[in-house]
Amino acid sequence: MKHLIPLLFLAAPAFADAPVIENVTARESGSGWRFDVTLSHPDTGWDHYADGWRVLDMQGNELGLRVLAHPHEHEQPFTRSLGGVTLPAGTTQVQIQSRCIVDGWSDETVTVTLN
Image 1 (cartoon, rainbow, N blue to C red):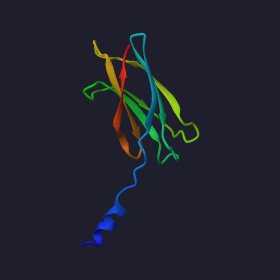
Image 2 (image 1 turned 45 degrees about the vertical axis):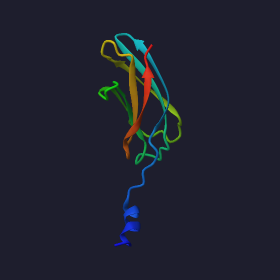
Image 3 (image 1 turned 90 degrees about the vertical axis):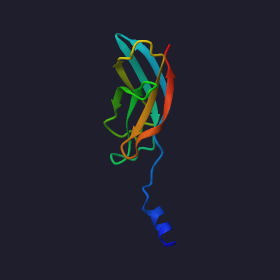
Image 4 (image 1 turned 135 degrees about the vertical axis):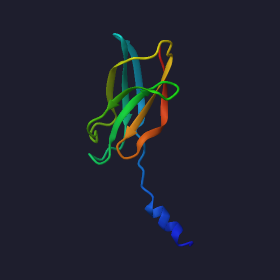
């Protein structure tokens, strides 16, 4: 049985780093909010890249989603925007969470205080 332990480690998937949220700006725009999010991730091409980020309320409910439709292996870090995000009245903070096509949603979020 002790020979199985090394094999289990070999069978485990190799996870890359989650996309890192380098910067977030948020501003009211028209009837909603605009979020500009800068990400960095070691994109390697169509098989492995940062493919999105989302705006969450402080309870983890999704308020907006920005899908990234292609890899950015030659543009790191990169910034993409999402406008028209409707926030519930009285919202003073939101969270931003990044996603990778291989590893899924990051466990980490960045909290943004709205002015």
